[in-house]
Length: 352
Image (cartoon, rainbow, N blue to C red; front, side, top):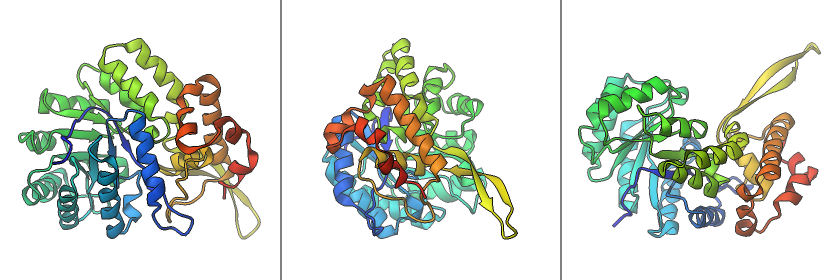
């Protein structure tokens, strides 16, 4: 039997480690999961956006979920990423995750073909539920990535079956929308933050009452994130805010924008803005810290020097002010954080 799904606390949206030749690094994946569990995480999310699911082959996608379930070994829950822009693919992936022993499935709104909210509910989420009965489904609403958005009203209709649709991952960044989720769905729906930097705001808002976060930066600081959420759930607002302040430099880098230059054919140089989106910054930081995650898979690539410097500076700030946030990495990965942060060569190699 799978570990029952617990839609609260901190669930880490795991990166997928790759070898230099581009293949999946399962040894590093196992080590990452062991680190997460040792640091008190509630659960893990394999094959989500942070895990580069859009560029995983389906055979890899399924393997990553199978290995996550096996490595977790009933110690924490596994929320498997199974969404697609194809309903049939999402059904197949969800069935696979259920057979593999996942606790629940995270199902992202259909990207690129951008169906209406009505179509998302009737031609996607309800079809998955009908064809993969018995596994809890968590809609993942992130219009900035998908170009579409399951409405609060359609979410409420899905939540009429709270056993099948017990929770939502909210990454709209829209507080008023989140309040509608609560108003329309009632008290039973678990609202999980999909944005690290909004987690406390969502938890303390009496009209949202989020129960936790599906986090990117818990790849780096699972213990600190877990302490923050536990403190807030225990109504220790002061402790939660203090930890959030320690983590703020990391929260700002889930995605980052840096100035860049391009030289045109006629010799002119023009300034542009390079936007590096998740998981490029977090993987860059993990690689710099020695966490053995390898490169991103194309079309994602290496950051510019300016981007790497921004990531390094954030880590230096955290380590200087609150070393306890990063120190658990040392024992888990056999590294010295201070030495790596001071080593210019390590960080130069991470820039294109």
